[in-house]
Image 1 (cartoon, rainbow, N blue to C red):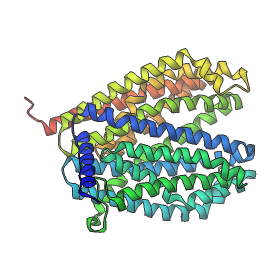
Image 2 (cartoon, rainbow, N blue to C red; image 1 turned 120 degrees about the horizontal axis):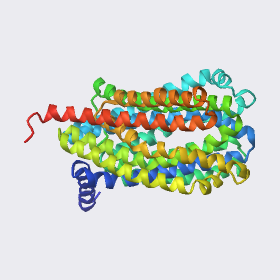
Image 3 (cartoon, rainbow, N blue to C red; image 1 turned 90 degrees about the horizontal axis):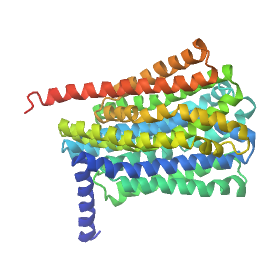
Image 4 (cartoon, helix red, strand yellow; image 1 turned 90 degrees about the vertical axis):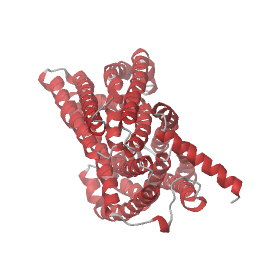
Length: 465
């Protein structure tokens, strides 16, 4: 590699590091939008995956649905390890300890390898029993066909998430975004080829997912290990096994993964309540409407991921005021977006509902009502999502988990039960309970974070001038 190219790459890396340790407002603005794009294309290719499989018939679509909770936990695990690695690297960069930052990245990859070996062995052994327990029944063989392929290639799914997080931790969000776009576009293109042209059926969807993830993983591996044009350096000489680093990553990864599980539990509770109060119609309304809520989450997840990196770097540098400014700015930015989004959803609810009910126009009023009630939930989103990511950036993953538990397993479920069964509001009660429960839970998260940051500031700045 020529000296000119090396100097250009060093300048780029220095610019990235300067971004995450510089003005928190500018850092969040610069880091968040590529992450939003990454999540948007991921949302698009998951949707496309479902559409292509739907062409195989109801059984294949149902088989994909039965594996989805397990798949989401797997993806959550990858994102959890990525968040833990991101947080540790960012704090090390803030503390100007590049040796620990490099070592943390290697430990994150080692965890990825270990889980990619252990998880398939365990899950494949119990897969059939697990699917039957979940009620897969007559489509269990199709689900097992899809699941076994995904589990055997688990490494590329998790590594692509962890590798992208390593890039984000040093502020290199554009390349992380480009990799996610490549993955999404490839999956959308090759899905129908593997499913229909090669006549592989639902197995083709699994192979397409793994192939697209393999290519993105190979690109990240090339950047990190072969080309070595990143700030983080991954090599044997930089590795020094440290159980403490493993623990720090895991203590964020487990709560982050548990949050996915909690979301799944809440969804199961909602489906159960709907089966009692409304039947298939209510579940159809919830399934369609919740896709819009998930879409509304994307900007806040992008801001939250950027906040995690900036907060981690500021905390590592012991610059608590900068950390607090980053949190406050992220909340203001998130609320501005959520209020604007909420207004648009409320006004155009019937038009949005039509997208999901063109084959059954009778669903439009019910989906519209769901969306307008859930506007309250959507507006409050940044208060909770950004608060959780802030604690992850501080290395306090279990506080983030507690905040998620109090919202999902306490306020949302209790309010849904009260509105639906105690106050006899039926299906509408589930929507109001979810919305108000989420609002109160997110407010508790916000207030808790503000109090924690105030006490943290007192510890590090006991005599403010």
